[in-house]
Amino acid sequence: MEIFLFIWALIVLSIELVGVKRKKTLATVTLVGIFIDALIGIFLLAGKNTFLHKPGGECFAGFLYITDPLSLYFKELFCLIAFIVALISTDYLKYKNLPKGEFYPLTLIITVGMMMMASAGDFLLLFISFELMSIPLYVLAALDRSSKASTEAGFKYFIMGVFSSALMLYGISFIYGNSGSLVFVKSISQDMLTIITGSTQGNLNTFSPTFSGVFMLGLILIMSGICFKLAAAPFHMWSPDVYEGAPLPVTAFISVGPKAAGVAVLFRLFMDGLGELAEDWAPVFAIIALLSIIVGNLSSLRQNNIKRLLAYSGISQMGYLLLGFVGITGDVHLARTSVLFYITVYCLTNLAAFSVAILCSMYYNSENIQDYRGLSRKSPSLAAIMLLAAFSLAGIPPLAGFVGKFYLFASAYSAFSHRLSGFVLAAIIFSVISLFYYLRILKYMYFTDDSSSGPIVIPGTFKTALSITTLAILFLGLVPSFHRLVEYIAKSF
Image 1 (cartoon, helix red, strand yellow):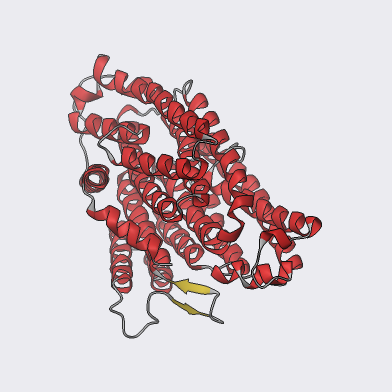
Image 2 (tube, one colour):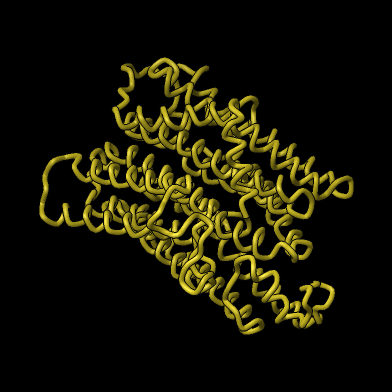
């Protein structure tokens, strides 16, 4: 999948270089390439391939690059994200007169980087994939060269991104220096811990205090670098400014793509590779989760810019998602299922909200929430979709967000039980608080008049994107078939 998509990115770049002038050629070619790549992934996930290694296989020394149901699931999600972003970008790039020749190839290369992160089984390959995803994102954040805000966003994102990369690389050096291995797939919980502890059981109790501390410091540094991509507190400081300054389609991509890739890495590293150390690293995730939930929800209450509001909302959503990692100390299967399901729900729901925000930005020439006045009369369908997206993010039944949060809270409770049930209760309370800032948007759309006239015309590309995301919000909440697929993926390793 990755090789094909990278070649396709070169094809898209070549089309621009040879000077093809048709308006939507690049967008069409990009969408076709992503669609074909998604079909390849489905073919591999179904296990019908005869010319490639089977799902679950490993290549490059037997552990560096992994193709299993987990990685293929995330790659399909990345393809879906890239497809929707390409759809909602077409008219906006034309409206803002932004360079399409850079946007589409870079979007494909970023997607390749995310796919490689999902398959990486070695820290060195993970770091290379991390940079392959990050560097084009810095460029896209500064894509609007006529805007000082966009240039500033790209520069801020670059500076903070370099810092997060340094943290990750420093953490990798600690782990390699203490274990002599860069592998973090399942064997890490046996081979590496055997090297570290000198025990054939990999029992945590056999760690010497000094050695254990250095090893855990390395893990915390790696976790910090990945949490930067998740925009989880306290690594969230870049998020509101970058979201606000970057072009809206780029903001939409940043809000979901790197986060899904980061979750894939955390899933592989902590739930798969370091399951035996869960009692040590789960409390760190618990602190980050609670801090993200508090900071994200309280900061959202006073936001008037839709992009900043969704930035802080995303911080809180990552806090909820990290509860699933805490839950591995309880029901392991429930924890894995909850994380996979919720990252899917969050990505599709957030893209629905950003799709509406992009259309409103083009219509109102503003990103202020107060300018959404009377949207329900100008475009009832857009208002209804934003309502569904907001309620799903808030966790209102029977939408997909409610099912996802129910899984996460149940997973966290299975870990804490009655010892720390107040932690889960606090998360639920802040989930209710989130309703206040989502309802502010709905108040302007449904209960405030606007003197401007004329309906909002929805282009065909937006209709496709909105249809996909809206059906997903309803389908994932109401139809249990997808839940069983996620459970299968969670059980597959």
